[in-house]
Length: 288
Ligand code: HEM
Ligand code: HEM
Image 1 (cartoon, rainbow, N blue to C red):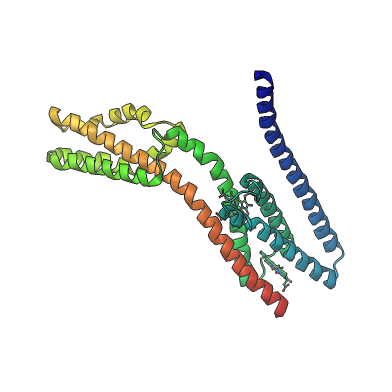
Image 2 (cartoon, rainbow, N blue to C red):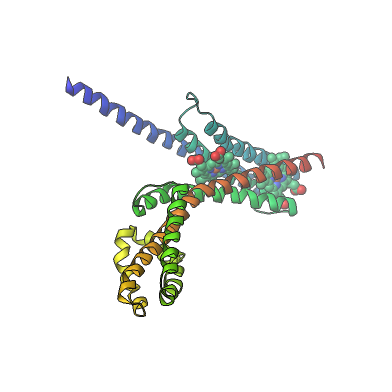
């Protein structure tokens, strides 16, 4: 009984893997062939320049580029359709990336690698920003989640990180307020700047380390700041230092969470601006 069940499970798992792999290959072939066709069309039409051929080449490549960009942007509609039956989101994502990259080549050939006047330069800038923010987003979506998992002690959403950070800040300042003037100066001069220190945040990322792993070395670094403190205040200073490092760590995690959320806003804003300017450009070349 067990054998066939396991065999069925294996078959299911490997089939989906194979399907994803073959879909990727189909897209790679489609994108490769389309790219060769577009390049061949562009370079042959340029070798035999005639005003008519040039104009039809420019216009056709413009329409092809815009059509590909519109098709790529339909991903947004798919994301908002919560019901099933319109294909897996991963398949839409794959199509989005290949169509977006092909759109980039079609539009670059359309422009003949010239920016033109003010409107077309602006349009081109937003188009390139859409493509580069897309590529950047793809990189971020692949790199940031594993990094976040490696550095965080407990998985927390952005809002929870803000609450923990506020609690730690309060804890550190309460200790300072209750301490001697020397204690307050030590917190002010040594710990406050550590809460927002970029090198320290980058160290968490570089070493993929947790708070517990960084804390002993951090406390050792702060030892010289405790020279001016009484024995009884040294314990409190250590607690304040723990708060400071935790705040820095929360800032590091917040940065990653914000990058994950905000790159898409940039991609969306540039997409909307690009389509808006493209509409003005199309009207101006067709009617003026
Ligand atoms: C995102 C889409 C588009 C972008 C980024 C874009 C960009 C550009 C740029 C930068 C130029 C100036 C090239 C130069 O001066 O040599 C240009 C010219 C032109 N575009 Fe587009 N374009 C787009 C879509 C379209 C579409 C859909 C059409 C179809 C009607 C079109 C028709 C033209 C024509 C006819 C010219 C030549 C204008 C002239 O020489 O005065 N464009 N485009
Ligand atoms: C003409 C080119 C492109 C257009 C018009 C475009 C537009 C869009 C739009 C409208 C969304 C959906 C945002 C939402 O509703 O949440 C999106 C998402 C996305 N795009 Fe693009 N994009 C283009 C090119 C690219 C390229 C070249 C890449 C990467 C190589 C890319 C990567 C992404 C990624 C990773 C997402 C996020 C999907 C998710 O939410 O997980 N895009 N894009």
